[in-house]
Amino acid sequence: MLKISEKSLEATKNNHHVWANYMKRWSPDNKQVFYTTKKNKKTAFDSVKNVAVERHFYRVQHLTPEHIGMIKNFSKKSPKDLHEQHMSYLSDFILMQQLEAMYRKTNVKDDTADKMLDAWRSNGIERLHSVHEKEVQIVLAGLAGHDLSVLDDSKDMCCFMQFFAQQITRTKTFRDTVLTALLKKATTDEEKHLAKMMKECWWFISYMFGMSMGRSIFLDRHDDNHCLLVNDTDIPFITSDQPIVNVYQALTDEIKPPEDHECDMYYPISPSVAYMVNKSNRFPRGKVQASIDFVEEMNIKIAKRANVHIVGSSEESLSPYKKYIGMNLSAIKTS
Image 1: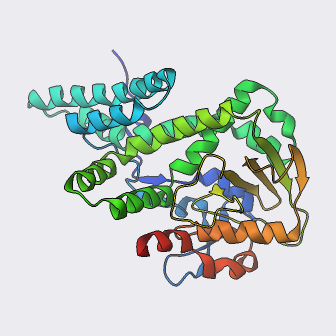
Image 2: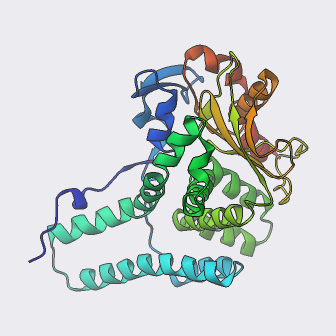
Image 3: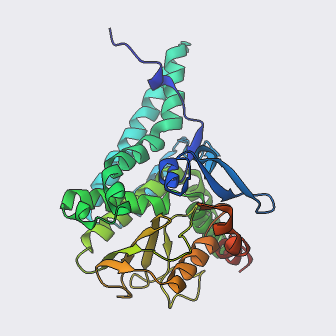
């Protein structure tokens, strides 16, 4: 008889939309960080477990045939192999949904079955992100130590690019930005209905977007400049609840989606190291020494694209940037 562990029945209610372990590189004690709170943008010093987290953020919702049709239509715009990969992931969720429906029809109450289904709804997407996180732990540690050779193997690079893209699309900031822009643009009943449908199955669509973006960044790796930015200045890099941001210099309209060539994706890894995928040739490949002006520019852009939290290694490192928090999303809401 198959024995089911208690751990497998545990439902993760509080979902991090930024990896908690990632933020520890800003922690003086490997547990707590300085971050801005939602109320009055005050600075708190607390566990990384309490930053960039929301109850049931990734919770799997019921997919109707209309939801499934919309997801498939989006996916069909992808290359054939990627579309098939999307559909493979989708089929897993559809199968579990069908099994749940069969169980409900029996009218038999089973506590273990109910716990399994609740855990599946709560943990389904979170577990996918956990896989990506485990795959890049050694890579991130190497990059934090200024070692770019950890990306020499194409498999490691592929895993890192998949992880990298998911750090863009999995966040609350990305969700709110996309859905708010979609609703603002909607003028017909059909467009408004599409926006509503998108919101209802965002838990899956956001992951699918990350898969597509990661594939694209990986395939373009020989054309784009990937560089490691080393910060030896007196001003540390900060991060936020949107840890990867587009810092393309000529991008002045923050509401209009950027063109493909208008993407310089910046990812702070620690107070002294950041990774950048730039299409503008702003920096060459390899290690680059960051200037104090560049650090200031990056910290401001990180703060502007944050939802609530900017995260730093000290209260002093956050103070100059509090006034910029959320400017990007506010501009979309008021446009």
